Length: 178
Image 1: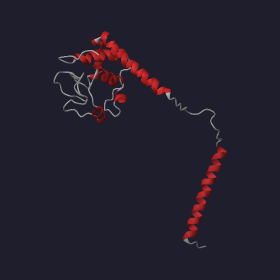
Image 2: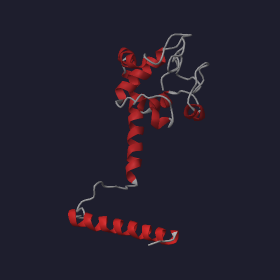
Image 3: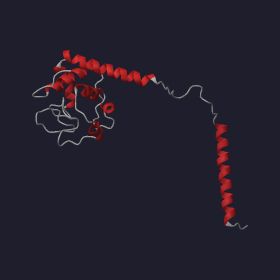
Image 4: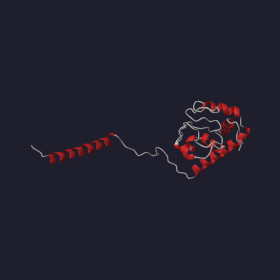
């Protein structure tokens, strides 16, 4: 028998549909599909939840700023030990993976010469006030989404207060406490 190409294409499409339909039917016979009784994951959409988180973060930040009055600078220096791999703190010191943090309190954001800051910090603008440093230390990626800093943050207000006190000491003329 001789088939022209239109018949061959039609036969190929028909066979492909039979194979697809047949494999679907065979699959249904072999595997029993039950609808789940409980959702695999629950999506909860509460409008108040983000506000509670913001309020909690704000309260934590306020607590750490208040705690600075009684914070321990030696503890701050000890906490800063994990930062030394990326940051130098010497007056006139060179930038490392991160910028030199000498006189960081009160300094314009993303202003160390010779350091390539992320666009997120460049666009943030302003200066490193105690409040801004506290927010950054809490969770850098939340403070400046897109920042290159990979540090997860300090969750405890007492740790941040000690760290802020230590960062304040890195200056010839430390800024007054808030």
